Length: 285
Image 1 (cartoon, rainbow, N blue to C red):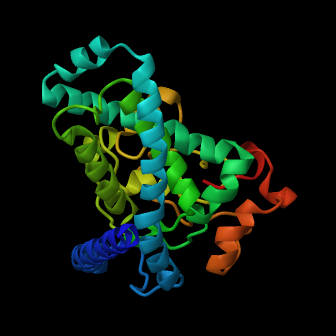
Image 2 (cartoon, rainbow, N blue to C red):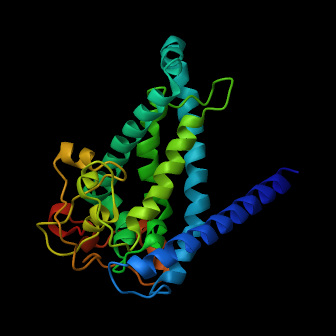
């Protein structure tokens, strides 16, 4: 009976992912064909591999997060006074949601930045940066551990500060909204779109902002724009780079296996010295 429930749950996840994939294709493929910043094919190199990552990362990181957050919440609530969570829970929903978006962004910023600065984490994160043609589907081109780690860094502060309250007597929509907003905004900022938004680009992330994060134009412009949603977080921490121009090339100088099996397994093996150098010397943004 337990196995049956797991099979049904897994099948439901695949159906939901397939539905959202079709919707994303309907939205982004025409937009990128009409407003593309670069001329590139829809079925570009690595398109099939990225589709595999779409389904893999739609299931595995969520499972790992659920397990870790369940253990964390159970232990954390034993140590923190109930009055603290009650006071946070009494905040107006709009205020708690706004605070949750900011806290989630700062946590995700540091998780992302550490993935560039710590050689062990870079071994996983470089898979995402190996893409030389950036479009909406590159969002999910990532090692499952890399995606899990960044999301964990983003979500832990929400639960630690009581902004997400899973043990309450009613459904807490705040973490659900935060997850949906940040997840689907990521598709937009990776999209191959030539849109610019003037002063709004300093407040909310855009394709231009994030494509500069993926640039491989030189050491003076890499390691910038780690934020997923709010560029002013990068401004605060000194990593914002947003010129009027667009990057001329994207990708990474760090070698990455060409096949999916190698990309998934290589970071788990004994590291190649070339992959373990400090980010300041060899990391590509």
